[in-house]
Image (cartoon, rainbow, N blue to C red):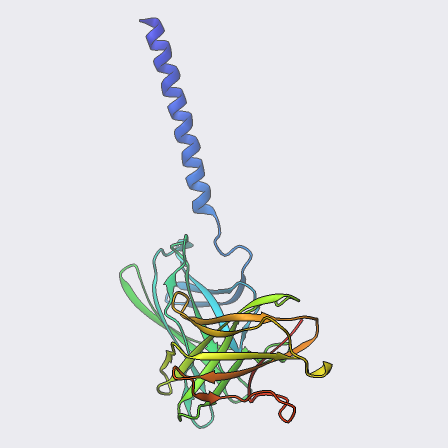
Length: 287
């Protein structure tokens, strides 16, 4: 009987140690900061909460595509709300009118139930007389709240164009924004863009099944192109346009583009020829 009791005690001790080890692993996961390594763009204090907006690579809001991560903290106990329900509406306040811009819905980030993520495509920067603000409507703890915050949207520090707003030959206004490559290399890069149709001053919808042709050139090097490029076509999984961009050397590149609708009609842009050295629709980058 003593032998049985001895082994029973050992068994209970092993189970206890295993349980403690498991609890420790769960605790470390809970304490992990999902925004570690991200840049805090702004912290909005309102309604007893802190709305923290982060970016993975940017240090501020710029024209073009901005992926944004949001957490909401209860200032009373410094805990973050799980599964927050958030909607947002950016508005550009101009001298003669107001308008919004393309946005995504905010969804809970994979693996972290306190983080919502989405994107905004700002078509233009603010200035001394015109500015952007964002209204957030959010529901936490069974209650709904709202806050509006003015933000500073600037042009990219390198001065390169990564978003184009234009009227197509079909009399529809479009917004085309480059999403990738974020860090282009001398190689064949994945290139991704998103295309939106302006339905009204505050409503922009994704456009599917068009084509964006791609002809990268180096204006400072005889306007030469590169091999192995692939035009951008719509990818249903990512709801964006994907292609291949070949960059054969460092320097300034102009990515000459044409937008074609689903029947192949050119809505914007021109071919690069000996007589025409650039398209009116383009992106820019430098590496």
